[in-house]
Amino acid sequence: MVKIREAIVVEGRYDKNTLLQIVDATVLETSGFGIFHDKQQLDLLRKIAKKRGLIVFTDADGAGLVIRNYLKSAIPSEFLKHAYTPDVFGKERRKQTPGKEGKLGVEGMKPEVILEALRRAGATFDEGPSCVSVRITKQNLMELGLSGGQNAAGKRAQLLRMLGFPANMSANSMLQALNLLYSLQELQQIVNTLENNNG
Image (tube, rainbow, N blue to C red; front, side):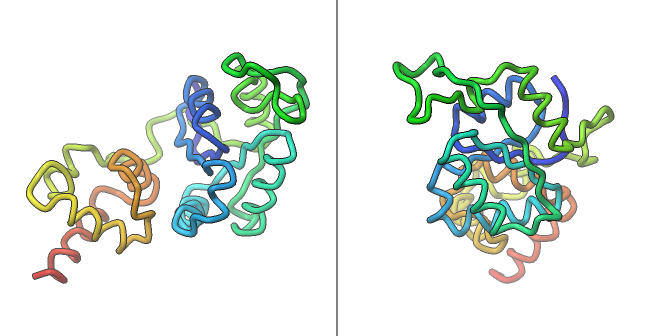
């Protein structure tokens, strides 16, 4: 499995599952056209793109092109890279019939095709240790009162608002985003600021 520094954005969970079997990277979803109505998710993608870089990896069909073009217009180009799947006709194993245009999406591509698409996009393949020196863990979230304790949900909701993250973000998604954007020390300072504002 190869490690990629940039975050990768795909259309849906099946695309995400396919990529996570091939690369060690943060993979985010647009929920298909859901990204058009989710300002908080788009804001999060902008922040991640600015901090780490973002590879847009949508399907080669019309819907994938619409989503790709929307992201291209919403996020500055200097923070974006684009990975493209070739036009391969067929259907994914989980589907009974091919998609509208009859093309395989990201989820239907072979691992070597996905890796080649990422290479052509200019993905940064990391050979060394993690890009973040000390990763934020679930244990850190517990120690900071953001998980498992009294009023953890309320504190987590305040943190999400303060950081401009989507309000409906799961704890695991929040942890992933925090690791992309902040160090443990930065998170501790943010939580201290939250506590001081509440005190």
